[in-house]
Each structure stands twice: as C-alpha cells, then as structure tokens.
Image (cartoon, rainbow over all chains, first blue to last red; front, side, top):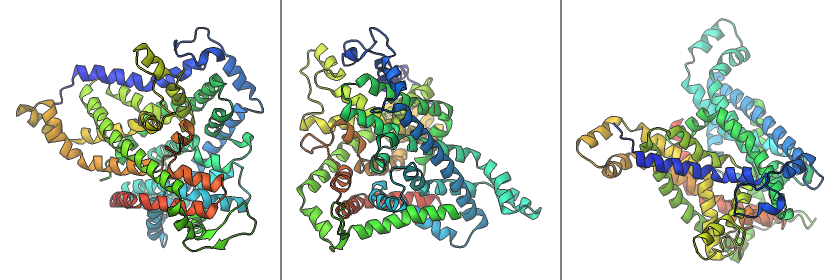
Length: 273
Length: 276
C-alpha cells in the first residue's frame, strides 16, 4: 500500500500550477496594450485590448502571421498524413509480406536513427537545391517522410498483433492490399494515432529546418516567424506573444484530446530496457 | 513500401553519403569554382579553430549542467507525483504542457522573464531587496539561465518516464518495506532506487544526446553570446554552413558532433534493437 502524503500533494499542486504559469502570463500579456507589456508590476492587464490580435489578423507584409499559420498547418498536416500512410505500408511489407531484404533494410534504418538530425541539414540543402524544392513547403514535407522512427514503431506494433486473422483473409481470397486496408490498418489504429500526434507536434514545432530551407518571409512557418519578431520587432512584444499563443493553442487542443496516447507512449519509451 | 524506400534513399541514405563526401572537399557557395578535394583539411581546420573549441566547451558545459538537472529534478518530480495520490493525472499533464511550446515561443517568453531591467525575475528580486541579476548578459549567468528554461521546457517528459517505471514496481515490495517499518526515505533509497537504475540510465543517455544537440534555446535567448559562451556545436555548424556558406567545413563539424554523440547513440541503439 503506497501511502499518499498530503504535504507532497499540496507541494506538487503548487508546482504544477507554477509550471503552466508562464503560459498563463503569455496569454494575459497578449491582451495588454503595448506600453503596458513590458511592465511586470501587474500580470493582469490594467486595460484589456484586442490591439495585438487585430494586428495579427491584419497579417501585414512585414508580419504575415496568418500566412505563417496557414503554412504551418499545411506542412504539418501533409507531413503527418504521409508519414502515417508510408510507415504503415512499409511496416506491412516488412512484417507481413516479408519482402526480400526487408529485415536487412530494417536494420539499416535503425542504424540511421542514431545519426543526429543536424547532420542531414547541409546535404539536404544541396539535394533540395538540385530538386528545386528549396523555399517551398516540399523542402519540409518530403525529407520528414524518410525518418525511420515511424516505420520502426509501427513494425514493432504489427509484430505484436496476431497474424491469424490476416492469414484467414488471405486464404479466403483477399489480396494483400485488401488485407492491409480492411484488417491490418484498423488493428493498428492506436499506434498510428500516436505516431500521427507525435509527427504533427514535431512538424508544427520544428525550428531549425524551416530556418535553413525557407527564405522568403511569406514561406515561413510560425516558429521561424516568431523568432523573426525577436530580431526585428523587439518593441512589439504584445504581437509576438499573441502569435506565440496562436502557435501554441492548436497543440494544446491536440494534447488535451490525445493526452492518453501521448503519456502512454512516452511512458513506454522508458521501459525499453 | 516503394515510396518509403525512395524517400529513405533520397533523404536519409544519400544525404549521409553526400555529407561524408562534403567533409573531405572544399565547397564554398561564395566561390563558384565548385568543389575541391582537400583530404582531412576540414577536420584539421576545425581542430585548429578556437571557435570550434569554444563551441565544444559550451556544448559540454550545457550538458554537464542539464543532464544532472534533468535526472535529479525529474526523479524528484516523479517521486512527488508517485506519493501525491489524488490529482496525479492533472499535475502530470501540467508538468508536460510546457513541452508543447515551440522553442521560439518559449524562448521569447523566457527572454522577457530574464530581462535585466523590465524582466519578471529581477522585478520579483527587487521586491525582495535582492540586487538585479544579469541573467542573459553575463557570461557566468547566461548558460545557467538557458538550463533553467530548458529544464522547465523538457522536464515533464522525463518525470513521466520515471513515474511510469515507479508505478511498475509491484506494490508488494512497498508493503513489505512498510511492514518492516521502513520510512518513506528508506523505501525510496533501498527499494525503489535500485529498480529504477535501468530507466535512469535510459534518461541519462537520451538527455545527454539531446543536450549535445542544443540549438534553439541559445539562438533565441542569447544568440550564442555573451562572448560565444552559449554557442554550441550545432549553432557553430549552422552558422559556418548557412551564414558563412562553408559547406564542406560545416559537414566536417557535423561529423565531429556525431563523433561526440556516437558512444551514447550506440548504447541507445542497443536498447532500441533489444526490443525488436
């Protein structure tokens, strides 16, 4: 019997609130007038103003915030969709069809997972330049589909689900595509949801890749756009925080909806050994 | 499978080869002459470069602060969650939420907290009659400030991993300890800690690898300053390659970074492979 300690509970609750306090301050400050923003003596705005949000919605040429939002949304959604579909199909080919060389490929893939992602930046810049894809959304979407993590994770899961159902369907005359579509894919629903959530979050928050591959301000994603504020709009702190909130809210919703999957798969990552 | 293999060859396999090739040639986008093989010169240039060593030092310094902080604070939070009973799920969620912020948003928020004259921390300090701390502008405080922000940003995931390992320990072990009259502290030290060792090793490896790759926090909070004290290897590589356009040299630096990570990465790959 683990004795819950009320003192520990009180302390942890205070700590928990402290952890999200910066976000609350960010939200409140985004409703402050510009001259009040830098004044720390009151966290609550003395007068609430929508000025920062009006400016955000105006999406001016120097700060096309809405455009960045649209770019982020398109890139993250396309990346997520492609990663989920391609990971599932590849995992099926390796673990179910058992294509020749599949296991060797899997080992190479696990090997490349230990190469730090930053090593890819320079050669990808060269390749994408040749493909004429630099400064387009494809520069961010296509390389993201090559990561080995999704294939590895879905393969692990497929190996753990019984194969008998699929075999029965094959005997009954289904082809591999039908089996994959009607049986394997639905069975893999939970792991694909988890993969999708993590891919979406990573893509949405990616900072270094768009920083390197995107040039025109209109092609920026939200994180790079926010960082741009810091160098050129340091006086417009309210607008910066409003944009930060806009960049955070979608993920907050994703987190609230998929909390179970996120926490569970993070928990599982530590139980590897 | 075919689309994925194409994508893998084009965006993983080919880049590794190109990067390897680049590290042995001189390729500067500023000069149109194209590439020139230079043998190991990129690597020897890096080893002779003071800025490379400053970046290495900053990277190791960051890791030396971050990794112990992550392990100790992560464990404390995990035990706190474990012993808090009711409300655990909510607090666990709260601890994780900072991690969903992108580094630019989180960094800009904390730049303001750390600001010397109008910042929140020094405002609170002044109320308590403490002298203002030059958080981001003084060499002695800049890296610790980045570590404080990074701990807040990433610690939730670590705490959850350790908490889950704690929850896997059979309740009977805790009961036996309680029957033997062990205090909570003794139970943590003698029962829980030995069982947690593998998960703490996992946290040690993964947090070391990610510390060596620190980039965004320094870019936003300090830009690498003051006096290059917070510019890590990734930022050094990024700036030589994409501001200085020295691609060959940048590629060599990225392989040196990989060398630094390699030992830890091999252990991690072992752990991953043992699963499959």
